[in-house]
Image (cartoon, rainbow, N blue to C red; front, side):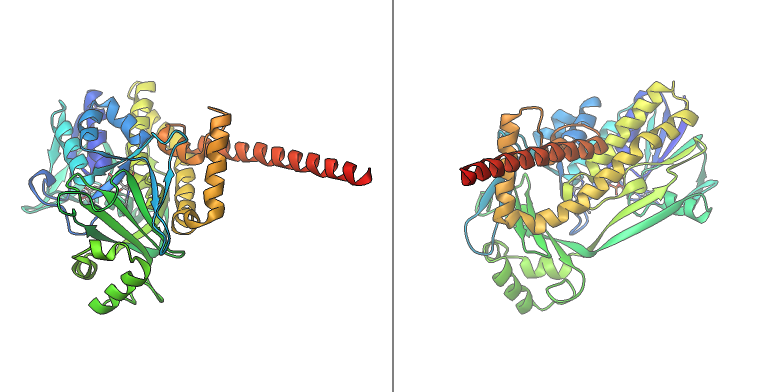
Length: 433
Ligand SMILES: Cc1cc2nc3c(=O)[nH]c(=O)nc-3n(C[C@H](O)[C@H](O)[C@H](O)COP(=O)(O)OP(=O)(O)OC[C@H]3O[C@@H](n4cnc5c(N)ncnc54)[C@H](O)[C@@H]3O)c2cc1C
């Protein structure tokens, strides 16, 4: 049994506490916020997210999948909204039945906190902001307090204070790659008593260099997220007056303008969030301190995988502890060795998916490609599986997904080249005759 301090009671920290408590460790989770189960969500801060197989697999292991999924809204495909023309529904899976799930981030965090609090050996401490690592020091409403632990796990998100401390001690290198795009949330309220758009899809308005998406909520509203450039024309910086906002939406998002009665207020008051990729290393020091989730490897949200990946971290750390007999000095380096290439793979796939979502999904060539891909999946069941399906509907390690998709494309390329060669030869023969 080890005394563990988990810093951050977000998605990764609270799930991690459940896994560690079940292993018999004494866990104290320190969170800078007050207990979110008693309060309200922050305005304009990603109120829902897409949960897929990796996250569900982790929740299943702590018996939380049923409760979380009871309030989830399955999204079986993308609904593309062109500026003019018809809506286009593109199913995520070949049978059209598999879905990613829109869930409330706050409700998920609260369910995890309840589960952590109910796990023997786990203690949750709120209003404790980590400000020092050696010794552990937290700022609280009553002033600074010190704490001790055998092992410290930093699950304190993309702007991790634990990572910052390690950087200050020269024990870690980091690179932060911010996009030139930010995000802002808007709302489509229910229309009468119903959803204003199809709740069975993730809606996308691809507009070349920018886009908007919308995910359904259980109260029949939709949370929309604008992913726009921060500067230049048609950017967050260039649009501020009510008339300009409405004019921009009437030109670029004409079908949603009538569905957004609070557009101007939401736009003017909701913050613009940053988007970026955090890379750092090492993730662990001497088998006594480690980073996990966004603190170690925040990624851009375009594959809907950040939280899923953070949950998968928790599963992997639990596995490493089981395999090493809870020897932290062995488990933490093993965890880093196994996760690093996978996390790098999803970081790159997430960046590439931004271009696909904001631009390619609208093109007829892309749509044809998806149809061909689904036809191949039907013709070669289990042998040809699309990247999206492998990432979202399996727990195949992310790096293996990349390798497998590359192999599939090579085989496909060779088959096409062979077919083209055969066709050219046949043409040549008939011309000669
Ligand atoms: C716009 C957007 C959309 C997204 N959509 C999806 C999606 O659809 N699917 C998906 O899987 N992922 C999505 N993500 C990513 C997902 O939100 C993150 O990957 C996930 O929240 C990471 O969990 P975490 O616990 O590591 O960090 P966080 O959830 O950020 O939790 C960190 C916790 O640490 C606390 N903390 C911070 N500093 C301190 C400190 N000094 N002391 C104590 N506590 C501290 C914070 O208050 C917080 O509670 C999205 C992200 C964004 C920005």
